[in-house]
Length: 176
Image 1 (cartoon, helix red, strand yellow):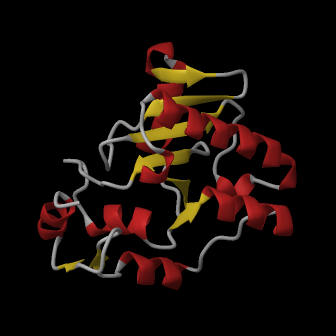
Image 2: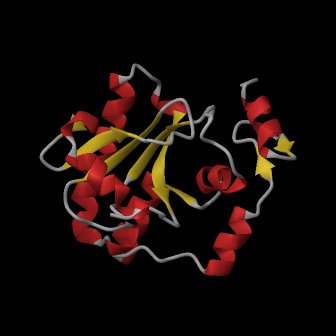
Image 3: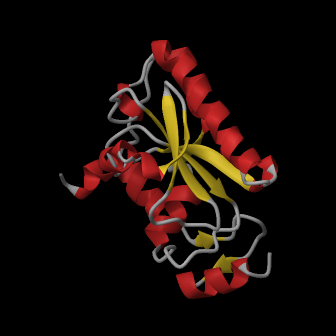
């Protein structure tokens, strides 16, 4: 099993499941990019957002409900989180990210990590749900657009600060 299929292996072990329903599970991200970083995965074998169509809208609603549940279970405030999907998924098995906006983590190491959550490379749940309802599919971003977004400056997600590098961004984020 390659690293891209690691999520499938993870959800097969009941010890990794924080919440489990007949339809989906919640696990902690093994390499969290913030203080709180969870993944909500369907039990149905769906590789990524690009295999979704309108018939999956009820499944997405269930994933979102579980995302809200894990925030509540952890005693956190919903407004302190981003919930969404990567436009350029790297792991197989559809998964919804539930990530706190603090981005305080030793695993946040690269510009790619930051920009994958803080540019349009991160598709908020509501936007993906609406797009799927209208178009019956999710389109891949053009390669040039992905490269442009990955190269964006390290702009703070909470103020106007722009960092020169990841260490200075992480130092700045601690002030929030």
